[in-house]
Length: 339
Ligand code: TRP
Image (cartoon, rainbow, N blue to C red):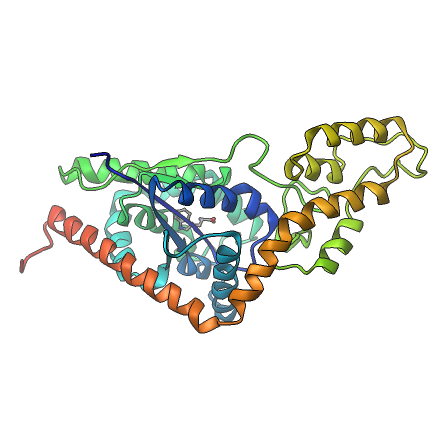
């Protein structure tokens, strides 16, 4: 019999999800889910979100529902994927405490993603301790479900590496092959990071350059009309630049009609094709992709108690799996005195 591989992936609920999340990960998750080849867990990492939002818990509470609606809207199906809430799985916290002894402070300090985030968030010397150790808590997330595969963005590669190290230490020290060494699954080249509307390398809430999955048709149109193109393309007759032009960057990613995109590029570069025209075309392409998502989202949003129920059921199921792993971990360390 073929043993099914287990997938675990997750998001911090700090806001609604945008089309960068969609193209970089959600779309692929739905595909993996529907292949029927994997046991899939999707975690809403609210505790991790709190590590740098402790003073704004309301944001996390609100985002928990928004993110779940985004999941359901893009086609994550609770009948096929288990959606769980990190804070509702107590075993994760206990696993974290055991793993913390297997990692040094200097090893975490060398984690490039942690380093970058400390800078971005301007923590300076005031790094919340809970934030600092989140790579270890993320190892608990991954190992509690014995995940083989962890589909994440490129920025999460150092987290997977740290998880692998902790797993190896654990299995060596306690001489048990209990924990599974996870593998990261990264987006294909060119799909890792969608640039923002303004041409910034990253679409991000804090930069205010996002298209959200929940944006209505008017908002979508307005955002596309404000997109960064070629600042030197002033008159329609001027030759325009493709490189760094967000409309063409997005068309390359979202338009499956590659011949049409090639033709538009040629016309634009030659001169005679206006920005408004290409933006209208991009709007059609994106609207066709996003309309069904938006409509499904509105449907699910009509029954919020049902959304919470999905999270409750998913967390219950996840708890059983995580508790089992914790039991094995306790036994391996020898803190199962009363068994
Ligand atoms: N750190 C991840 C992010 O910022 C979110 C996350 C938390 C996660 N726990 C996880 C991702 C476990 C994969 C597996 O996006």
